[in-house]
Each structure stands twice: as structure tokens, then as C-alpha cells.
Image 1 (tube, one colour):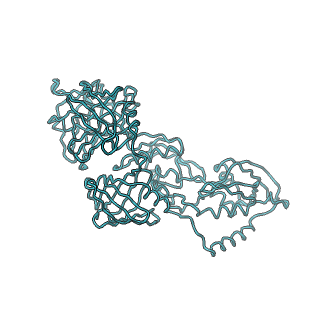
Image 2 (cartoon, rainbow, N blue to C red):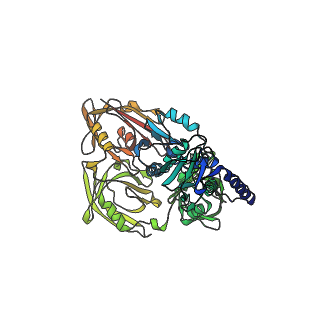
Image 3 (cartoon, rainbow, N blue to C red):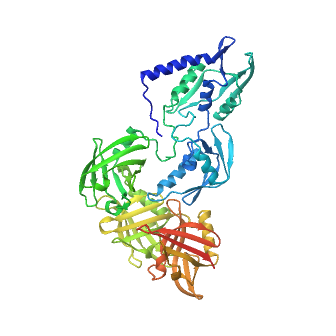
Length: 585
């Protein structure tokens, strides 16, 4: 649960002061020198030191959902079908980046066992499977109620001295990490005495440093720091540690474009897609629909243990009227949720996000670009899926399906609205001549759209295709190594396998796939295996509008791949899941 910085009452301060006065009795001076003031092994100060030097297990909750232990580096996880090796805390951001790439998805993370976990006392245990990990995670205290102190840290090295019961020094040790300090105090027996060489430097959660010169000052600093920050000991890895000032600033900094709306489990995205919301500091919010009409409302925020709540009120936009839990907010995305099947996802649009024509021009020339989607007057044109654009110097562009290549011209310039646009002139079939205004610009993905007439073009970048990553090469090699048959084809719950029974598929070079019936070729199509903009492996099949094979024209996601069996899936616009399984002949 969230722990906001406490504004302590005078009574609390007085009580703390009394506690520190009583703590003085646990310190004992050796030979009368303050530098030799000792700490008993079982004292409250020793316990504070142990809690502060404990191993924090909350930083990797996105992986193990447990704050009382952490996974030992390195280990490997599979995130939405992508294997990621975690070598450091910084690598954990890669997992969240993959989760955040797609607005509408069911994020899946699988740990590759066995792994080793490290507890608060730095002891380790080997975990063999998911069930064992879940049992241990269920025993953890979540929500900030664990024993460790995370809001303050020791600055190393620190020199320690040990004494016997006769107050004679018996040893000296330098500790250089939390692990060494925690294990040192864990190894003491009741009645053992330890002294610390002062001064000692402590670093607080906000980066400020304090210097303590005695055991009493050390105990006071550690005790006061326990509740000074949010230790983030929960499984809500995506809460991004909001505070009220930061939340309000992010909300009012730039306009927000609506990307998804679900109300009472009914998807209203088509109705509200690309509505533009502008939040003002005075609590007002204006919404501009796709026709340019402006609607006014109000907003307010409050904070709970679960995170920020955003309340929206409109006279007409009733689907937005609700108190929403802010699940995530960042530079580019805000996600709102409410119980009962309610969700809003919006993308932030700032002036700095407007693409530069020169930037677009250079990005297009760097690599090849695969067509992911083409819409003409709102209808998807499947026959162009997987086709490859090459934007060459001197304004020459080619479009190829691996066998047939069309050539034309291209140029970049602003349209009447000042938006950088891609002008392609290509008269021959398949005919894609058009002026495409750029709507989204990423290093690996471009989206062009003319909303008023239902035109849309999405391109995925493929660089140096002959040197694709190992997974892509492995799948391509498997597909080309002989014939395949369709073992399963389902549209939702409808089994349509029989429609593709008796056909043999041969995946050849140059991205061509041949289908035989009784050893006689009957149709050719296009196939590709690439890793797309969000690092997912994609399988493109294109048989254009053929009555039978046009059904499997799509960009498929890989589910599983072996030398003898390949399973892919695709989700249609209405949410229907299609499953396609190839087995080797």
C-alpha cells in the first residue's frame, strides 16, 4: 500500500524523542572513549541496522510478485513470446517496455526455471518450478508491512570493531556492502558487542546525505526514515510512484488522444477513437471529436492507497463519467480502469511529437518497409499484406511481393494542415498511389491516415533482412525444409480445418508459398517471418482474395514453433481469435 511522507504531530515527535532517550541505555562506552561506544547484538539499534542493510525484494515484483525475496541475476523470462535475459535491475525496464508497447493485450510473463531467489538476509534458495515460487510468494507480506527499511541506505565502506564481555577489542572488519553488513550482524551472538567507526554517511531516498557521529544519532536517523517514503512493496509494478503534483502536471502538460474506450464490458473504441482531450489546471476539460465539435466537462483527482483517482464529468459524454483508477501514466500513455469492465486508454500528444519531414525522409531510406495494414474507405485491403516497399534515393520507390515488382516515385512534404505526408505515385497494379499524412512516427513503425475518407497505411521496418535475428532465421529455415499441412484452423469456436484439408504448403525462397493438391500446384502466395516494431515474431500469409486461402491471409502471431509443428494465432477486429496450426508432412 502507498505510504506518503508523514507530517508528524507534536505528540508523535515527543514520543519519538522519549524513545531515543531510553535508547541511550543500550549503548555502552569502552575505555571511556566515544569512538568506542558499543552496540549490543540483540539491541534495537542492531535490529535497525539489520533492517536497513536487508536485501530489498520489491524491485523485481514485475517478475516474481513478491517483496520478501528477489530473483538472483542472471535469469531468463519470456515476455509476450520474447525471451529476455535479466542481468541487472536496469534490464527489468525492458519487461515493462514490452508490456507497454501494445495498448490492448494480455501481458504474459513466464520464468524459465530453475532460478535462485535471495531473501532479505541474503540467504539463497533454488526454485525448480512455478508452483514452488507461487507458494513462497504467497507467504510474503505485501503493501509495505515488511520489516526492511528502504528509505535510507548506508554509504560504504564502514569499519566495525568487536569486543568480548570484558570490553577488550577482539577484531576489526571493513564492510563494503549491505550483504556484508547484514551477514556480519546476523553472525553475532547474544551479548556480543560491536562498535562503529564514526562518522558514518547515510543516503536518503531523495538523494540527500546525512552524517551521523554516534550510535544515538544513527539510531535516530534510521528510525525516522522508516516511513519517509513509498517503499513500493506491492505487486502494482506499473504505478510509477505517483504524487499529486506530478500527476496533475502530467495530465495538464499536453493533449491526450483517445485510443480505447470500454464501458460496462462493451467496446466503444470505434465511437471515440482519436477524440482529443485537453485538461486545464482549473479543473476544466475540453474534448474535440473527429468532426471538430467541442464538448466541455470537469475533472478532479484524489489519492488513495491504490493510487490516483480521476473523476470525469460531462453532460453528453456519459461513457466517460466515472471515478477512474489511474493504473499508469507516463510521457505518452495514461490508462484508466474501473470495476465492472471499464477502461480508457489515451496517448499523449505534445507539440514536440510533430515529426520533421527530414526525419521521416531519412527513416524511410534506411531500410525496407513491410505493409502491415492498408485500408481503403474503411475496408482492409488484404491483398497488400506483407508487400515490401523500398524507398530509394532520387525519389524512386519499389513495391514487391517477392516475384512481381512495381516501380514509382515518392516524396515527402507538408499537406494543407502542415502535417508531413508521403506522396507515392505508382500507376501499375497493385496501385497504391496516394498522398498519405503521417500520424505515428517510430523508428520501426509508421502509420499514415486520412481519417475523413477511411484511408490508412501501416508500415513495419525490416533492416538487413538477410541477417535477421536467430529466432527469425530458425523459423524460416524450418518452414523451407519440406512440405506442411494444416492440422487445425479455427475461427473462434468454429473449426474450419476441413476447408484446408488435402492441401500441401511449400514455403520457398523469395517469400513465395506454393500450395499443391495431389502434387499439382494450384495457387501461390506471399509469406514472411519478421520481428515487428514491438519485438514480436510475426508470420505474414497473403493469398489475396482467394475464396479458400484468402481466409488465412493475415499477419499472425507465433504461439509455438518446433521442427514438426507451428502454431500461430490472430485476433480480428471483433475480438475473435483465429488459430492456425501447420504440421510437417
